[in-house]
Amino acid sequence: MKVSLKACLPLVAGVLSAFSMTAVQAEEVTLRAISSFAPGTAFARPFEAFVKKVNEEGKGIVQINYLGGPETMPPCEVGNAVSNGVVDMANVTSAFYTTLMPWADGLKLATVGMEEQRSNGAWEYINELHNEQMNTWYLARTGEGVPFHLYTTRKIDEPNLKGMTLRVTPVYNAFFRALGGNVVQTAPGEVYTALERGVVQGYGWPVQGILDLGWQDVTDYRVDPGFYNVDVNILVNLDRWKSLTDEQRDFLTEMALWTENFDRTTNIEINEEERQKQADAGIETITFDDATAKEYLRIATESGWKQVEEHAGAEEVKKLRSLITN
Ligand code: 173
Image (cartoon, rainbow, N blue to C red; front, side, top):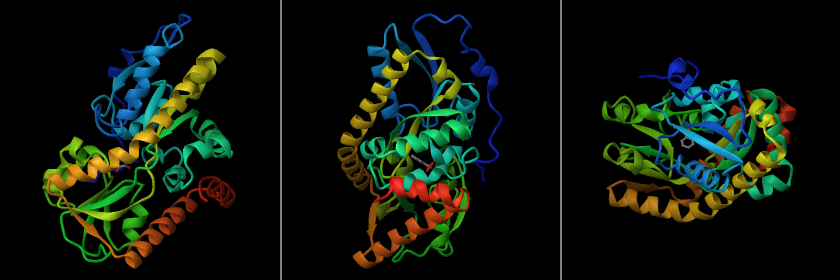
């Protein structure tokens, strides 16, 4: 059951080579893109809106050939694929590419929104690190304003996970351990079975997407408050990015800004709808009192930064933290 994000399945190269571009490049370029989230589900949707808009407005400039999601490539391979150019573009959360950039899951700790990150130098710095450490261009971040939650099959009265095993990714790893839980790391595709078989008694996931994945059938409680902020990023292979014309790059940047804005302004409403859908599906909410909630969030933030500090230089962490938190 334990599927380490560090030991992913080998790449399905045969499937993907069928999509390879020929060397001849027309004025209009087609970028091959992959998503680490299942098509049509919560964290594929902003990317799909981006693809649709690019393909509608980018005729004669740039088109995107959306190859699919985890059915095409394991989520934890997506970072490698965009880094080495097997695909040109990826919709992927940093938690799935920590093997390439171990500090990257620190992006979830941002309390500053993308609009400000684009104006205060944060985006430039994060982009620079993606360029240097992963050979990618940090085109856009979606998920702003979407918190993560702990979901369980057991009722808990306090933030104490002793005796429980929780499904994690690097997003929740340090936090759930700090609360006394045992953890097992899996890709999203393993969560349903792990719960069904009782291998785990809970998991981390954002407020959005539970019903898309059918997990309401194996989930009894959502613990409030939520913590952190989702980061699902649109990355472009850096060599491919450099091969584009200024017009093509400017167009994609414009589309990226549209996507970030569209995503930010719709998330508040979607979060609310999702909470309602969870309640309608029988998922009960466990809400801590104010003092407990405050301590819960303090532990989340402290353990989260500690995990980032273990993987990045002190100066890098200091700079990142000063740019993405207020
Ligand atoms: O798989 C996960 O729980 C995870 O890390 C994640 C990150 C961003 C959005 C959705 C899930």
